[in-house]
Amino acid sequence: MTKPLRLVLADDHEVTRAGFVAMLGGCDEFEVVGQAADGDSALQLCESLQPDIAILDIRMPGLNGLGAARLLQQRLPHLKVMMFTMYDSPEHLEAAIGAGAVGYLLKDATRDEVIAALRRVAAGEEALNSAVSARLLRRIADRSSTGAPPTDALTNRERQVLGLVAGGFSNREIGEKLGITAGTVKTHVAKLGVADRTQAAVRGIALGLVAQPAADWPGAAP
Picture 1 (tube, rainbow, N blue to C red):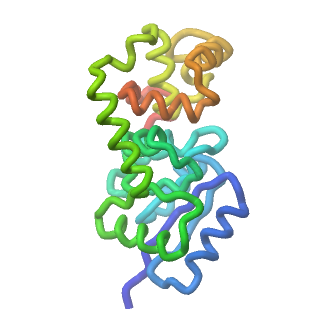
Picture 2 (tube, rainbow, N blue to C red; picture 1 turned 180 degrees about the horizontal axis):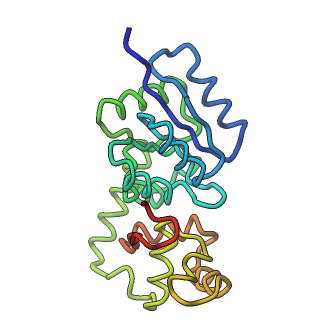
């Protein structure tokens, strides 16, 4: 008998995690071997449990799903990452792909859709929500037709901050790297016109501004 594929699930809502586990009930192909409520815990679980697939919510306290996905791809390149999210926007899908995710599933998906997506990811294929993917393709086409560089309106410091936020670093870590206070970092993020750090990470990844962690940075892989 083939062993089930091992999953780590990260979502800050316990009810969502319980619902996902219940949804897989009766499906012997997959087993949730670890659960986390934030990105940092998800990293630790994946490093210790070595699962086949990590399923991450995008918006979580501390290290969000995008930052966790990017660090997982650096530390565990064999691991497949799937986003399980409420965000049905092309911006979030683009950011998820940029962070290394090969699956993008909305939380209103049916049981059959969840299992089918997991099977595709396990087989080495991509499993991206078709409706959101179509909107992303239109967005990319529209952006290409304008020919306008998307980062023109940002200052050099804003690009630095945005790239580090997208890389999964906290305000304190960014401040230490750039020699500014965490409060100043927060002010820069606010000036970017985004609702929160998750939106900032989405924008930074979509614009290709993600800063790769050096070995001596906080949170960098050993």
